[in-house]
Amino acid sequence: MNANAKPLLVIGGGIGGMTAAVDAAEIGYKVILVEKEAYLGGRVMRMHRYFPKMCPPTCGFEINTRRIKQNPRITVHTMATVEEITDEAGDLRAKIRIRPKYVTDMHLIADSMTEKLTTERVNDFNYGMDKTKALYMPHDMAYPPGYVLDREALSETDAEKLNEICPPGAIDLEMTEKRIAVDIGAVIIATGWRPYDATKLDYLGFGQCQNVITNVMMERLAAMGGPTAGEIVRPSDGKKAENIAFVQCAGSRDENHLPYCSAVCCMGSLKQVRYIREKNENAKITVFYIDVRTIGREEKFYYDLLEDENVSFIKGKVAKISEEPGSENLVLDVEDTITRENLHKGFDMVVLATGMVPNTPDFKIPFELKYDDYGFTDGVTNFDGVYTVGCAKRPCDVSRTTKDSTAATLKAIQCLNRGE
Image 1 (tube, rainbow, N blue to C red):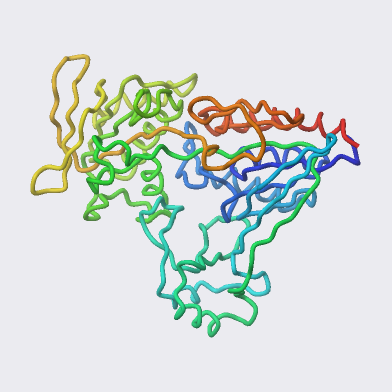
Image 2 (cartoon, rainbow, N blue to C red; image 1 turned 90 degrees about the vertical axis):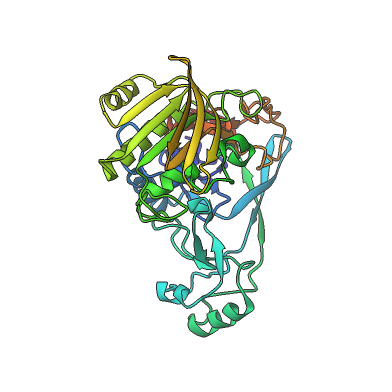
């Protein structure tokens, strides 16, 4: 190890970025971890469980946050973005912008204080399915812990109320952005993914039919910290869904939307079928698919569900979803490609398995990267010591992301050791 090595900059605090940070720091290297949200954990923290073990993501997350918290070599900046990276004579320098959260660390904020506010904001953690108060905790296991204030959502009346009910100095409505510059020795880009915009799939009814949801929304419905406290119910009326359809490749493997396979959607839907069967033993589920793609030991995950008499698999791409006249039930038009029968089937609720899209188009990496047609990058840049990991490179699951991050960290360390 080079004791004089400059820090490793990790852009993105999801599972890939956290893995890279702890791997580097625990063998003695300084790390600067930058995350645009108010919390670490990324999309994984919005999941109910992992496949194939069906354990909650909080298990691994709690271990990683403890490792980060106890390691003085890791500096974490949340609500932050990297605005610029320059390379002068082989020296990398990054400029980081940190947005204000308007809550200081001088005093603890009591939950009862938020209940006295009236202004609300859309809860993006739950994909807009509910709201929080303007002063909010990102989620139950948020790290760094603490409240965040949405200044734009806060009314002037509630601003005055906060000054009355909060301890002096706990809230600073005049807090401003900070910009810092840091010298770095290498960079790992772990900017992650987002779900494909289902509103573009107008033929599948998302945004038009209340009871058509996406796979990421189903994760939050199943979670205890979700908008329904873990009850899988219809958004339109709150009734328990008894007859549910899963539509695979919603926009994926489609030249008009995402021509590629996102690799995880099949396993994600099979996992969610299990959520439903665990919570409602009478529920009937139909999975409409092009191909069921599972890998290695994940095959058994699929074969077990084939034995469930309440779960049906129909090979066919759904052409249209519409509401039944006079009700909020849904009708799917699809051709069964095995029987060649045109089906017109009704359901209580539909889950669209939307694909993974890289965050790179929304997060402008401040140096030249080579992108493919879909926004994924192979990490090739004009700078030595810049590595891309996980879903910034290609669609992949948690296991493959963490392995990719560890491999990139080993390469980054070699670069750090060449520095002064």
